[in-house]
Image (cartoon, rainbow, N blue to C red; front, side):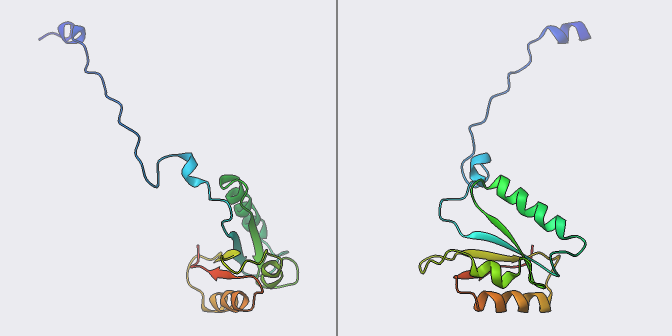
Length: 133
């Protein structure tokens, strides 16, 4: 068979698949339902230290992806944007958590985990401590 005769044959048409349902179906799956708890990124150190801008940028990106849902940056040290102060400023609802606190670390850190759990336990707003990012 020559290449010219192969080229004249029609190529099979590709069928479009039906859209998948479930968790990863499209951009709208990233939208959080109204009333979802706020995300609080617990950052080690104080707000003026080197690298604090990375946490702020991560929080901004989360807010862009989850439109309308706030992402707070809270530091474990210092007075500026302190975790205890951020948690105290959240809305209080007895039925649902006001925040999910996620330690911004590369893995388990006993001192950081203890500080996050202590702040969550002492918070006037109901909050949940999550695993590190």
